[in-house]
Amino acid sequence: MRTIIYYFSGTGNSLKIACDLALELGNTEFLSDETEVFSMVRVMKGGIDLSADRIGLVFPVYMFGLPLIVSDFVKKLEAESGHWRGEPDKYIFAVATNGGGPGGALKMLQSRLETKGLSLDAAFSVEMPGNYTPLYGAPSEDKQKILFENASGKVKEIVAYVLSGERGKFEFSNFFVNAVSSVFNSLVSAKIPGMDKKFSADEKCAGCPVCEKVCPADNIKIIKGKPSWNHKCQQCLACLQWCPEESIQYGKKTAGRKRYHHPDIKLEEIIQK
Ligand SMILES: Cc1cc2nc3c(=O)[nH]c(=O)nc-3n(C[C@H](O)[C@H](O)[C@H](O)COP(=O)(O)O)c2cc1C
Ligand code: SF4
Ligand code: SF4
Image 1 (cartoon, rainbow, N blue to C red):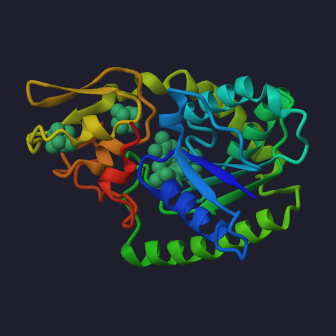
Image 2: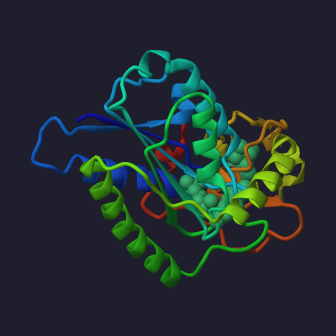
């Protein structure tokens, strides 16, 4: 069976999980069990390939909900899935990486798909190091190691479930958390593109321009050797986390806070354009 995994990732956690899922899904006795991994950002510019038997969606939780890019991807998926509705065997699964508070992200995804007549067959939450530097610094190396070991076990569980063809496992938060997350997320969503007003580059900026390249939303332009943000931000924090000089700050609290990106993912791999 063919699987296509679509991912979105700012700091590499979701990309790492997508790649590990792909490796494990292809690790069967059948040559036909091939899995491909594509960036949502890249495929959004063209059409979405829905020809595979299984479609996986892997993304981070933002503000207890879905990143805006993932919402846009789901809209496009719905629009392009017309021919698909007559194929009940098609299998859609989702994996939300998060820093320990998945909130209502998976439930929101299921509701959005269902309103368009598409069904989610399984949904999983994978805890990874949190990357929201405006609130906290990266976890210690020891803590990261434990999270990566747990995540690797979780990937094996997810793959076993998906390969079994079973449907109906949903790692949703409880009703109350889903309801509060939904309200909170709908209040903040409209503000996210303009939240980049708090970004700045301090005197360490070398004009390199990694931040411009790594931004999945084409939201950064280097002008006179410094980044400027153009208010179509996703809040993925890729610019802040991948800046080699740790020059990018968000408000007043991020200076000196430990940065994070997944140690197995290289800069060239995270660039999604
Ligand atoms: C804007 C933003 C909001 C976030 N909100 C949450 C959240 O509500 N709950 C949570 O557990 N983690 C949250 N996180 C942490 C990420 O979900 C987590 O680190 C994720 O694995 C990052 O994936 P990535 O490396 O693929 O970008 C947030 C991160 C960002 C950048
Ligand atoms: S990545 Fe950092 S050093 Fe490079 S241009 Fe952007 S802010 Fe400056
Ligand atoms: S400006 Fe920074 S936080 Fe906003 S989308 Fe681009 S890389 Fe992500």
